[in-house]
Amino acid sequence: MRMLLTIAGYVLAGYCLLCLLLYLLQRQLIYYPVAAQLPPTEPLVLQQTDATVLVSQQPRDSSQALLYFGGNAEDVSVYLPEFAAAFPNHAIYLMHYRGYGGSSGKPSEQALIADALALFDQLHSKHSAITVIGRSLGSGVAVQLAAQREVAQLVLIAPFDSLSALAQRQFPLFPVKWLLKDTYRSADYAPAISSRTLLLVAEQDEIIGRARSEALYQAFTPGVATLKSYSGSHNSDLAASQIAAWLATAP
Image (cartoon, rainbow, N blue to C red; front, side, top):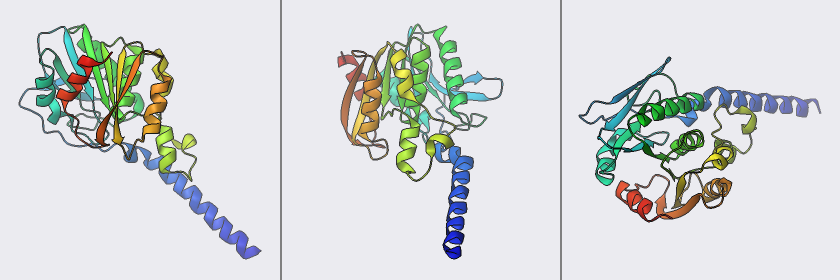
């Protein structure tokens, strides 16, 4: 009996240590900062009190703009030429998260949302109609932005209802709900969105899973969002021209 209690004690101690490591290292598991291959044009600089955020841009004298938030390991600058070609009537802005692509600071949900709101407000002084696109992690940023600002239209690529739900599936033996600092509970914000929204879901998404995307879709007010499937996995390329075509035909 004493041996069993000793073994149980070691197992419990090991489990608690793993929980502690998961808590301490969680942002290293969520965010994977990458360097930027910035195009020749100068980036827009968003100066926050505690960070300098760079934004790859294709400026245009237009009332329309496109604002893009990428995935957790994405260099958004490489998509600038493609978005610029697919949306010729829009100014294009691709935000590099803190720690990504030359932006200073460290990424967190609170920081990324604050940067997104500040950037939108800055752009809205020049562009009255801003389309917002968010991919994967960026869908969480885009949803919270659209819930607090009036966007022209919202596109969510490989979106999820909450990061907590995703993490719980990845780490089923741990109390993820109590450990996560950044939860990106998009489903809680969806009911506040009135802008036309298009959810694009990969049919073979091995990371997000269709159930998580459909849970977010169901959280929108009926009639606001449309869900469309496309062939591919989570990291499959989705052409900006295809996104533009879907937007043109979406109800």
